[in-house]
Amino acid sequence: MDIKGIESAVHLLIKFGSKQNIQKLQSGQFYMKRLKYYVDLEKNTSDEMVGDQYDGQMMLKDVKFTLYTCDTNEYVGQLHAPISSFNLGYLNNPVFCMYMLDYRNYLSKEIHDGLLHIKYGFSKEQSTKIKDFGESALVVTNTNEFFKRIENTFKKRGIDYFRDLVSYYDYNNIQQLKEIQANNPRIAFWKRQKYAFQQEYRFFAHTEVEDNLTLDIGDVSDISQVLPTEQLLNTYLEAKCTLKEVE
Image (cartoon, rainbow, N blue to C red; front, side, top):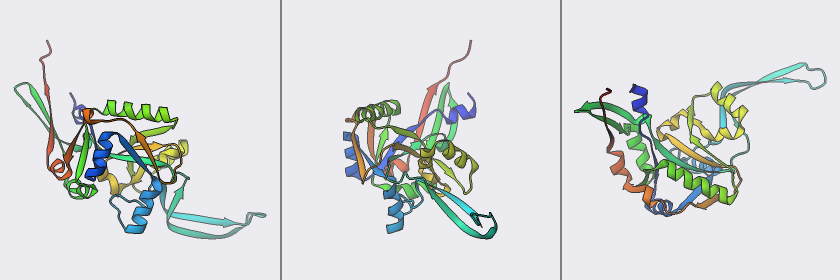
């Protein structure tokens, strides 16, 4: 087993939030806020942990605009924008955000008496910042079943949706630009590098709402566990696997 295989051996979905909201989620309330909520949250309250005034938008740095006359195409002048944002019209689409514990949390591996031990944990930045997301955490222990229940609910409601990891970028990222050009809704799956500690996994509904979209995915107590956020952030996960000799 190579190091990349070991790193990727485990993944867990986690939702941090208030105790009340986490209990609602475990009982089946899948509550999605539109992207504009997160944009306004930073703009109106200066909350840049949960809020992000550029969520669902593409940011470019050091943009130059050249002006020409319409009839003769003569050069008129040039404008310079240190920062420019592009909104493709998805701010009224609802999203649901979770934390993905995966290879990025990989700490170490050890082998003792034929047993492989793999450790995963949270970084110091995550332990400091994520605790402000809420006092409770829902840990989904069966992600495939969780995805299945969400997909079935969207189908019943006749709503298209996307789900994927969020990518994090520095300005003027060509990969981001190409991806969004090929599939415009992918703009909702890119956030600035400052949010990389969130390791976000996002569900994006392809429909517009005035405030939120609430789905009933059914009780998920059988595939999840609720833990105090602070306790979870100050623990590490150890996965174990018995190794066999190849004959």
